[in-house]
Amino acid sequence: MLNHIHLIIQSSDVSGFIRDFKRHTSYELIKNLKSTEPNAASLFTTENNNYTIWQKTNFPKLIESADYFWQKKAIY
Image (cartoon, rainbow, N blue to C red; front, side, top):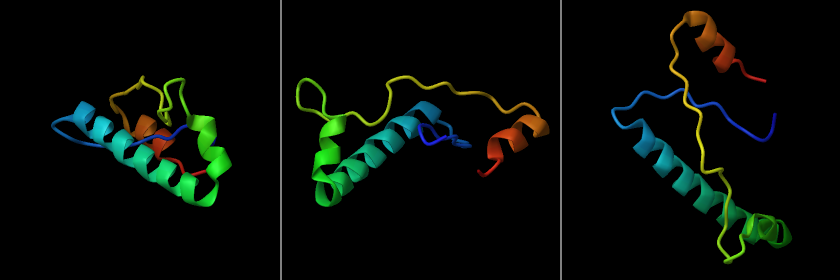
């Protein structure tokens, strides 16, 4: 699927990591879109002229088994 990613991370502050990851990748993606595909950047514009790349929600899952780990680690 092209509309989501799985991250396997370990951190003492997972929510902080996700926040910073989203902030950085949003900034870089919009910067890239503006320079290469300006019309596409407008697809991510909100009502107040901000940009939204990521959904506000996350669905973290604890990896509790090797099977679950390998299922999520699969590269498509």
